[in-house]
Length: 118
Length: 419
Image (tube, rainbow over all chains, first blue to last red; front, side, top):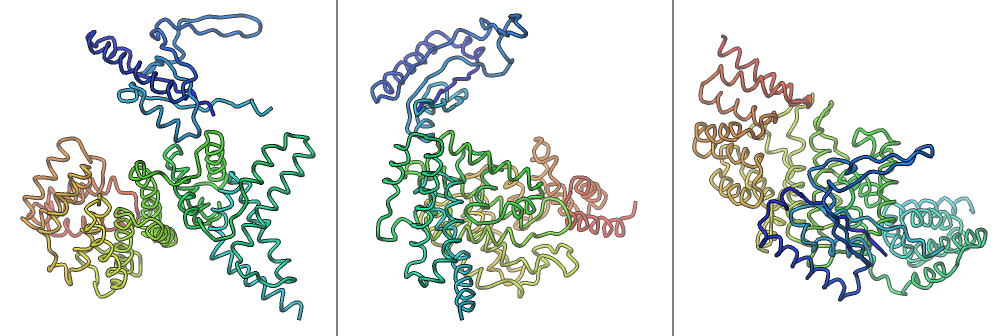
């Protein structure tokens, strides 16, 4: 079953880190990604650009409106995601807990609707 | 004659329902992979038992029969629905094959553990964990659970529906956690049991000081857990609950007024429960893998073993609080330790510690912190300050018996130190 792991962390904190710290973090991310690719749990992932680059789009009554994002101002911002394959929630939780940002931020683990049995 | 047989069978089925329905449900959930399906199957199985056993006699292994029948009825029901909706039956075939029952009555105890750990999964909210555990593991009705937690039944029912949906949709697996994850998962279970116990032991608001049924349910759950999984902290929690229960009768006057530990009639304490609890504490401590529940139980055991309040081994209690505080550095434990230090070293020593907690900003809204301070101030002869502290405690207390106790203290103080 697929789960989406949404990574929430404090952008401002991240921006304050010296380059060596940021590089070390990215190294950990790469190692993590490699490990779940190896065991077949990796489906997809992306780092997102910072929340100030977000745009909110709505289409109401045929009219499109756009506003400066993100959707909601929070202390921790959506910074990226992993789409993983896991046999159940416990398995997904184990994977999510190893995402480097789990240590400082929060990972939302959401099951993906499974339409394959249709 | 037929009526006699039917009545006899009915009695037996009722008795088996009371003793075994939870176990049967736990196994059906594993076999069928769904709570609601399993509950329907359970209901069908027992309904069928009432008919069939009157004709064919009571089977040699009723539980096995019920599980087998429940499973068969569920799959049969699903097949009929599948045919009607012309759905893909391969999933159904798989279910039928995978739920084949082995001949032996194995894994039934494990199924009850699976059920407990699933109901107490941390991915469910604590409220949902409690509701689900009481409903599925203890077999309380939705109304009984709602009433126990002073929640409207429809709200409680919705909470349970959402919890089951989450288990299904997020795929929370029906399994006993592996050794590596057992400690944290066990914590979840113990927390639920203790919340249920506390809800029964000291109603957080409202009329009576104890809601006995809930506490009994918690103790029953605690016993089941120790039976299935004799882990030190499970033993510690059971011991703690038994030690509280042992003193139940002596905690209140016939009119429901609160009696402090130092004033309780120790001859009313249940010695059998105390003995059982002490044995559990000793086993838990011997394992060296104990935690906060065991330590709290050990402290309660020291109290329980003192023949009079004056004979209480306060130095031992302080020592246990020292260890407990390291394991669980919470302000409430700090407060209780300060009270113990007051008993060992005199009121001033305890008061200094309590003042430090409040000055830090901790427990300023906790009525017992102010009541404890008030008590020490009273013993130091600082009547005016004691009145202030107890007054603050009264402002914050919500439980009726506690409020009336604090009010009585205030009256006594005002009488002896009029301003």
